[in-house]
Length: 63
Image 1 (cartoon, rainbow, N blue to C red):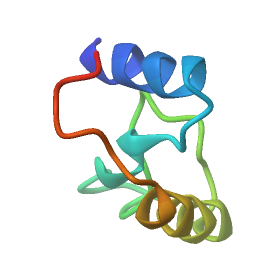
Image 2 (cartoon, rainbow, N blue to C red):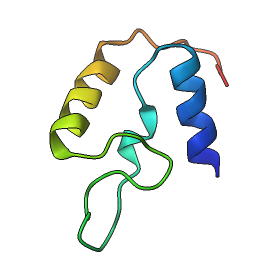
Image 3 (cartoon, rainbow, N blue to C red):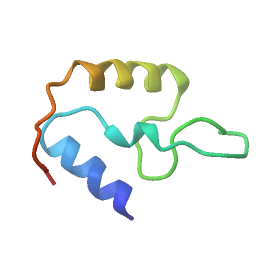
Image 4 (cartoon, rainbow, N blue to C red):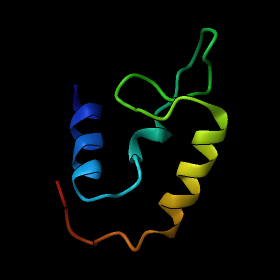
């Protein structure tokens, strides 16, 4: 699955998990990250998004 690959590349670089933006559409975890993301709770999501916004992301592909 592509999300695991992206998450692994983020972990390799000690970056936040960018896959946090891919969320479930339905079910009891609606609005929380889908498979391929190790961020699981609303508090973790908020913290990870704050980390993502603090990164100076490269302009070229990094994967």
